[in-house]
Each structure stands twice: as structure tokens, then as C-alpha cells.
Image (cartoon, rainbow, N blue to C red; front, side):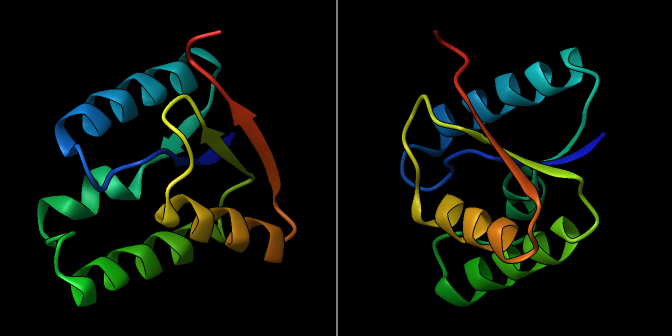
Length: 103
């Protein structure tokens, strides 16, 4: 199953990148194929520059249209970027699943 993975990125990017990688691993363990735009796009777009951040978010939302589900990892809270993803999933009537790594 193709899934869009939502987790925080902005702020403590080192901590949030490590967390997102753990979330990806969790998806793979569940037999899912995660797409994590905030890890991919921030390699060539600067998340601290508003225009580039918006481009990355828009591209991630566009890719999300082909996903079967959005998975939202909430251990670190829900960021504004994640809110965009959740809103997009609701608009597309895509299933949303909230998860925690630490239970």
C-alpha cells in the first residue's frame, strides 16, 4: 500500500529527520511503501525560505493524490506542514491513520 507519511520537520530538523526515518521504518515493517516528501525535497529546497517551503509542500500534496492512505505520526505533535497534509487527505477523502512509535 502506498502511503503519505506525515511527521514534523521544521524546528529541530536533526531530531525530526531521525524521527521521520524511524517512522519510515515502521511503515516498511507494516508492508507499506511510504513517501516522505519532507525528507526528500529538503535536500534541494530550503525549508527556511517560505517560497521554497511552499513549493515542497505543494509537490508533496500533489504526490499524495496517488496514495491510498495518509499516516500521521504524532509522538512529536502535529506541525503546520502536517496540518496541510491532513487537510489535503480529508479533501481527497483519503483514509487517515494516526500513529505513535512510543506507546
